[in-house]
Amino acid sequence: MKAHYRGTLITALIGDITLQDADGLVNAANSRLAGGGGVDGAIHARGGPAIMRELDIIRARQGGCPAGQAVITGGGKLAARYVIHTVGPVYGGRPSDPEQLAACYLISLRLAHGHGLRTLAIPSISTGAYRYPIEAAAPVAIAAVLDALDTYPLAEVRFVLYSDRDYEIYRRLLAAEKRLKPQ
Ligand code: ADP
Image (cartoon, rainbow, N blue to C red; front, side, top):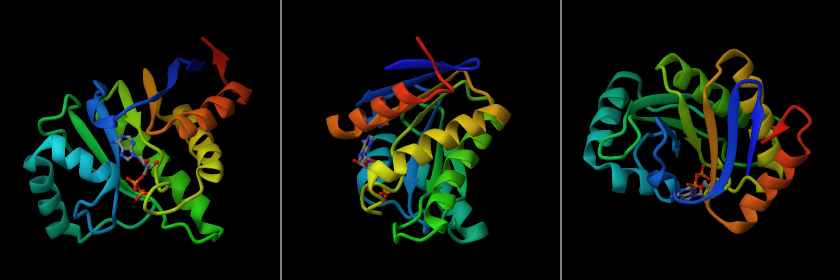
């Protein structure tokens, strides 16, 4: 589906984020920046070892990356020029969970904007191995992205969902979101 928020095209689709031709991809990384399964594994597998080499340098400099923060690398062999590695919270039903999750999206858009990216593809952070229920995570994700766009506008934000069910949750929320204008 497509909608507009101010000057930004907001899209949601079902797909593999590693195949997106956006300027940047967001990766749901872990705090060791060490690569893992899920979307992280898929990005490293398709992007090649150059991404991990950059993360090795970042790790040597600053250790890992805490939940709610992000680091940026090149895209290696991906079509995307950049990958923004953000660390979502491991879901525990704590008040800090939605705060850290929202911070992931905010900082990802800040990095994207700061590096001159026009289009950014974003997966559903924390809702895989980190077990954040997607019904609870999706409204946080959408609100955080729209809030961030007020300060860090982009030409397009693309939510890339990995299942029909996840897509349907996003589609319904986006259709009901009063801040959006339908395409
Ligand atoms: P986390 O550890 O933050 O939960 P995961 O990668 O385990 O990260 O899962 C986050 C979401 O990404 C899940 O909804 C999962 O289905 C989805 N996902 C996994 N692989 C891909 C992919 N290649 N493209 C887009 N989304 C993906």
